Image (tube, rainbow, N blue to C red):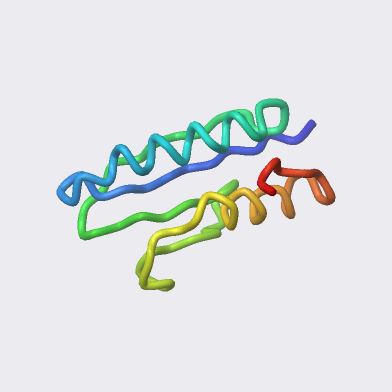
Length: 89
């Protein structure tokens, strides 16, 4: 199995840690057998980005909003477990 690593980069000044930790929990619960790690990476400047194996799959700067858990799960699933159900209605 190929290693699949997610990084969630979040702004510490903006107090985005809880949001980042919650998203990490959601990803780990959904992809417990597919992901090798989920890392929380502190940053600044309002950043909230999600990367999978180095590829940015979401950036709040580009989207002008925060991600929905479902859209991140779908993006991860499409790259590491195509066709797999993710559990949201």
